[in-house]
Image 1 (cartoon, one colour):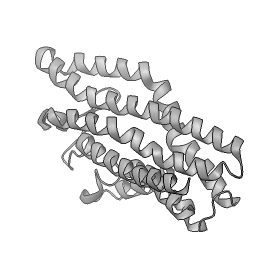
Image 2 (tube, rainbow, N blue to C red):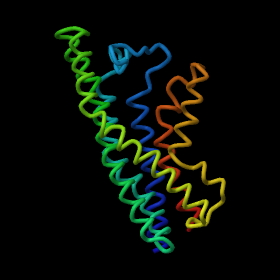
Image 3 (cartoon, helix red, strand yellow):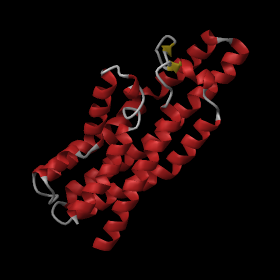
Image 4 (tube, rainbow, N blue to C red):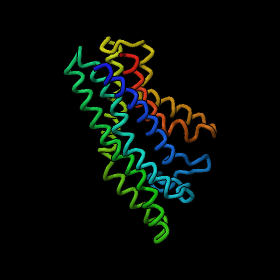
Length: 219
């Protein structure tokens, strides 16, 4: 089983990194970008971003999501020896969140395409209404799945480390997408041009890769 978990952990790390690259294709816009529209969902730089970026981002995410899930599966396999019920709940929460994560990523890649086509034909007002309406439609699964994937799973892994279900250094409580996301947001809050996009736009994905790192350390 340890050999299987080793390869699952490596795949999890690779998947998280691949997801981070997919995030960069989607969200790397530069300091000139401005949030526009009623709900500030639209990015002004969409006008200048080629369509292929969103196609590549979606394709990368298609492979990255099942790959980074392997890192969590390795963790679950390790935890299940001491707390099978806890491991089963963690696995279910994470996998549901990951499924929603791909839905979220795909939706975010569709928005620029919708924007480009409708704006060209009918102007900004109509495209703003369409994108706001679609966001409201998926907002509940968007935030629920994000919470399961990033926040709840991180909290449960931290609990597993603190209680000894995962035999790793306490420093590993920092290796999760919630902590990585907070660090990314704090860097963006500095308003420095070098931190406007990265690493905040891909920090959660790098945090997902860190689940694989924890699994390697726990083997």
